Image (cartoon, rainbow, N blue to C red; front, side, top):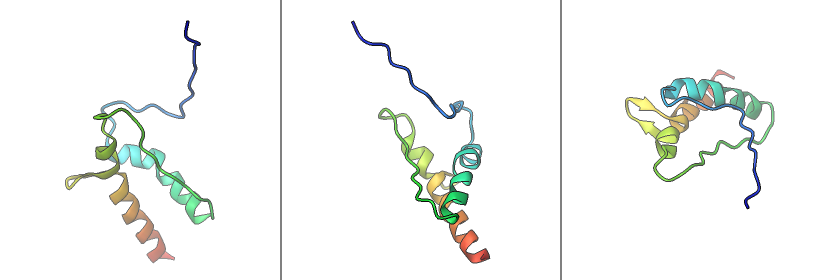
Length: 80
């Protein structure tokens, strides 16, 4: 008999969640942490074919986390 395991999630997103909504909810607070001296990691984990690469990279017309993060970091550095 298998032991029951419980998992805790900070948030679960709908399949209809946009790249921008995901970025604003998950990454924007992390950027603040980086500029306050924290070491931060953004990790996409999941089953093969579940959309990790799409979430991280997106496409030309719908950028994912990495291009949005790069733009945000360089803008923030330029603003300082």
